[in-house]
Image 1 (cartoon, rainbow, N blue to C red):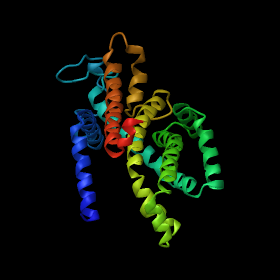
Image 2: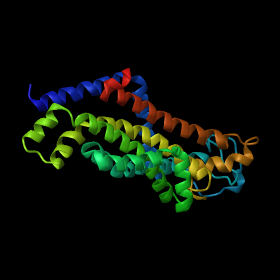
Image 3: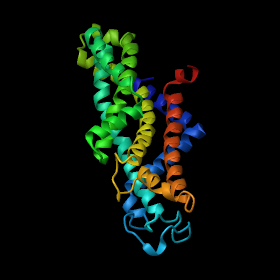
Length: 287
């Protein structure tokens, strides 16, 4: 069988295995719903999320307002849909930023070793000394409160994890026979890294991305809750939770529905990540 046909057959087998994993499939569907809701928020939201309606203040869930209204009469469903846009924006862009910085550094450290590995590893260990959320809060406090700064803070906080995954995969792959053959045939460092090591490390990096997205979603909610992310009146799940605190007794739905949205989004990506790990890296299930 030709290499391309073999790769296609192998990819088809992985896709079938993923379809048989019901939890991963469920997580993927829910994650896709959140992404679509974020992209189509202006079209599917029934009301303007920032427009108050003082005639429907703290209204209970009903046919006109499926998830109720807040203390200014704003529709909760519309604010959650638009809040999902902020969550997805931070989740995706923060992971992209972490990969743009972390993958080259991990390749550099794992392939060249010695001084490069020592330098990158010391920087990574220093950043990992701080818990992810603590580092993100500290960076956001320094950068200032805004959605873009929150994205930057969360992205920087995720760089160490990406570096470690990329470095570990590079250390494993650079001792394989096909890498040795590429070097023996005169392949330069750029060729070996770009055509042999990085493509074969993609599976682990995809799994890391599905782990990083829910972490970024929680990070955005926390930063917005603390006033370091999205600023009112713009909708955010964290902003909604912060605004619900004074009304937990008379209007518990103000906190319940945004909280459920955060749980559903993070759980969906985690289930998808677990399924991808089992399919793309079967060794992970036995570790």
